[in-house]
Amino acid sequence: MCPIYSYKHRIACFLLSHVNALPSDHPRKALLDSLSSIAEKARATILLPTLQALAEPSTRQTMDTNLLAHLLSSFDGSSANALNSDKVWDAFIKILQVYLRPGEFLNPFAV
Image 1 (spheres, rainbow, N blue to C red):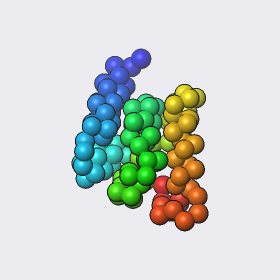
Image 2 (cartoon, rainbow, N blue to C red):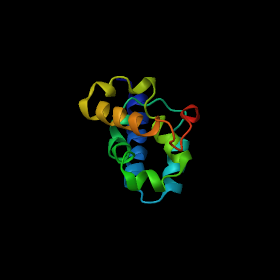
Image 3 (cartoon, rainbow, N blue to C red):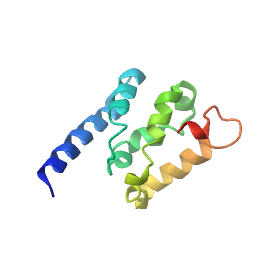
Image 4 (cartoon, rainbow, N blue to C red):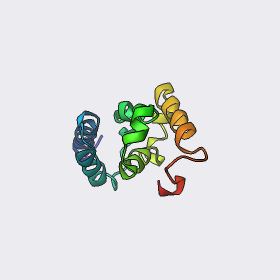
């Protein structure tokens, strides 16, 4: 593996892990925004605890839609291998069932 890729991967993982740990939406959104242009194959796996919390009723009522869109964008082409994991796949399906049904507050095209 290329040392530069390894270094970038470690930095991205470090920053993504802070998204899970931060209690406030504003810094979480700032971190995700700064990483939005980076394709990181481990993004969905690292953000799994936060992604799993998206389907919780208390989280749905309080989460900022911009933060939600950033989190949902974790399921991009780079996360295809992560979707083979049962935990990530289950979170993905649950999120789709919750947010892409009629009457929900998120526009599916915003993601």
